[in-house]
Amino acid sequence: MSRQNTRILAWTITICLIALTASGVQWFRDHLADESTLTGWILLLSTFGLFLLSERKRKITHPWGPVAIWLQVHTYLGVYASVIFLMHIGWPVRGAFEILLASCFVFVACSGIVLAIYSRTVPKKLAAVARDYPLEQIPVFAAQVANQAHELAVQSASFGEGATLAEYYKRRLLPFFNEPRGSMYRMFPTGATKRRLLRELGDLDRYLASQGVACRIKLSQMVQNKDDLDFHSAMQVRLRFLFALHVAFTWSLAILIATHVILVYRFQGVM
Image (tube, rainbow, N blue to C red):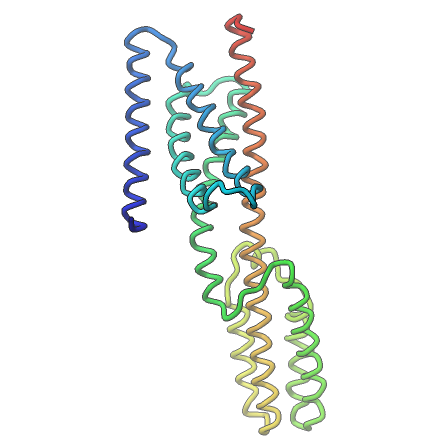
């Protein structure tokens, strides 16, 4: 089955489940039953099912099926749970605890949507870079590129006119190679700084002889390499941070749901 047909089937199943649940809620209402109990337990079971993805990722050696399939199930189950949440919650939301629980659920749902989008787009953007860099090794690669650039700049100073390149390195490139990128870049990485530096380096060719131009070309490549490393680091850190935030709020949601269930049944006199 093609990926598109699989996606259509998954959406069809999800919509059918939502319609079936809505019919069940309406049946409860028509028979003067408590529909919040039905949606509550469905929501609780759906939330438990969403936790299974994290459990599957920890079971590396167990034949539980590909993680990609679990991720798809997690995505569509999250859509289903979000709709059931809208059926379950009373409008307007009253009470500090209920507002906290609803806000936590909304945050988990929204962060899950953003995470799903990033999980599709970030790998494509990273694939456009010439080389793949593991996050843990990026500082090592960055230090190597910085050392190579420094040695090349020192070497260019002996070429006479190459002092122009060495002076530019000290003024513009030394901070680029040795200082971390700003918080704005880490949030929204772009190639604006790289393009500006490469353009400025290219403008130096009129002052350089053949040896100086050769050094300038190598230095331009090092600027490209450093920018690739920064781009990989920013994208991977952002993805990992969002995933960690999503997991942390998911566990918080689990605790709040458990507390909510206990409070509801104590209020009904069952516990």
